[in-house]
Image (cartoon, rainbow, N blue to C red; front, side, top):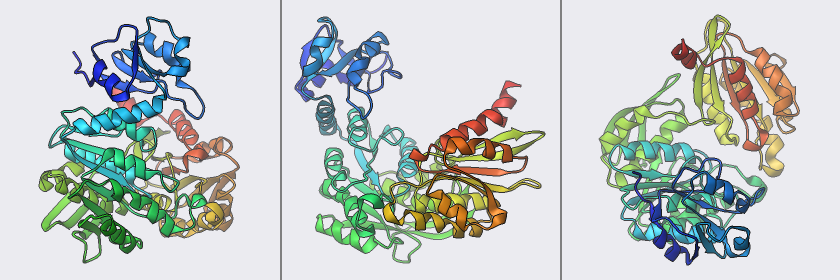
Length: 477
């Protein structure tokens, strides 16, 4: 039998909820999606940008939800015997449950933010900490005004380590989230020119990320990127927030988590580093200098939480890229094979540069080519055209043979490319799909990347449909 995450009484008390119907003793989990809810979980009928969760309460209960959390204004829509917790506002109720969750935790907590690398750093921390004790971490990129409270409210009381990702695209968004999480350690991976549509400049982005300092527990620590141009600004703000333990990471000689040597390979990286006076050589199960740099922050953060640093370094060899964030597949193409690198989840100038660098490290087969399929990077404001045009340098530096572009902003890169590197251009990912699929031949390495709004997953899905996954096909045979 599954362990109860919350008793119904504790939930009602935390959310100051009225009760209706016959409630179960408790629930085994929390969900905001009626399509994926598991029997015994509580369903929160949150109002989203597109749908109102109250429309799916009946579906969730039929699927086995133990109870549903609904707002008082819509209570009359449901049968009198429906198992409900009734609150004034469902999202506010979830936030109150998250605060109650934090109050009952004795775990060591780490929070991660930054312009690039939040999710991969969070996943690396999950990997290294879970090998040393019960660990809870945000799923996917649950890092916003509903994702953070949901992740925190889902944290079991027995957890030893907890990892939370905190994101923003406007000033003022991190403060309420970090004050909910109250981490013992906060990590800022890097500050880069993203969301420029909403900020006056990179200093303003740094200031917004620095809001994470406001929630760090007394006596806590922060981990900052010393190689980044905003380091001094962040360091100053951390001290202003009363944080005295500031650990820096990077190649800079003054970094406490310092890169000494790095060897990049097609599918992994070998790192030699000095982490808080521990000389360590380790392997990361992913390629890219950016992954190696963030691994320094991971090991420093894990050590500050009390984890064994040598065991943590060993765990990094098992690291794998999540779907849409560098996941690699070997696919069958005719009588040969090609490599597909799925970077379709999101993009900004820094992550695009990193992904092109990984493509440059990738090994191609005989007669194979490095192919980049790129969609628009969004939320860059007036600088967008120049930032897209500037990618031509990374394309050349990383020996990319062909580039396929889609979207009005990527037209700027397309125009900047030499004729020989131009694969194809279309206004949208759907319009580019056929060209990109038709281009692939045995030996190629294809990397697909763009902002979520560019819908580059469409092209990844088309490639996966056209070219079967080699491992899956071999298992079937």
